[in-house]
Image (cartoon, rainbow, N blue to C red; front, side, top):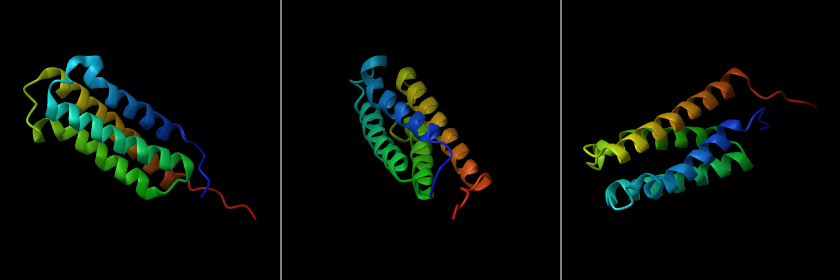
Length: 117
């Protein structure tokens, strides 16, 4: 399947890098539940984004969407929502990852690839 754009996957890869580095940049590396959530989620988002860049499959976008939702709600699940920095980073990064995935899924169904003979 040929894709018209890879911008969403590149953006999600950049967001994964940000998410991985954010515990050190923002200063919550000592908050283990939040830091581990950021690190492990970032690795998963990066791996799936790279896979989507090399050979697109719709399931990859669904997985990234689920990962984005997980990152978005994770401050409440891992009980760090009382700490501002990890909550803001995880919530907004998850929100943007999810929105990008929704746009990618919409584009996949709205503008299917053209088949050439």
